[in-house]
Amino acid sequence: MTAELERPDLDLRREVLTQKASQDGLDLPCEVIEYIAANVTDSIRELEGIVVSLMAHATVLGKEVTLDLAQSVLANAVKIQRKTVNFEMIAQCVSDYYNIEPDQLFTKNRKREISDARQMVMYLSKRHAKMPVTAIGARLSRTHATVLHACRNIEERLSLEAALRDDVSKIEASLTC
Image (cartoon, rainbow, N blue to C red; front, top):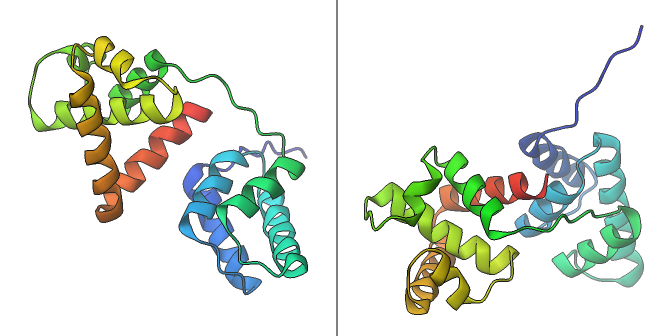
């Protein structure tokens, strides 16, 4: 009998990483869990192997587990396939996530859900598409100052709002899949 196993989703990958780390007595910071969960997508076994490898590297090097250490371990262990993320992909993912029409992002509408989605597009475009703020502003018919304000606003809110952090990680995961 053959059973097809699906790839674990982002929430399951986070949970597996958290449980495996606690079983092994390893303290994984949230950003490390997010990074590994976003980049190791094939199997649970692969996730567990990464945790073991992180623990070994941290022990041998006598270091704490940091995002830099996780990035170097993953660079050696997993082929991180980064597809090129562009503005259109970001706008589509954000509008899908917030369940709004993509065209609404480009309007002057100031409704909270649309302006929040628009700010998310600005933040993610700067972060993932590596677009200059003037180019992001031009795409959305906004000034560069508006884009800078939006990016700062999202960054400040990320430290305070768990729901927003969750939104960002889910949108980023949909961008990298």
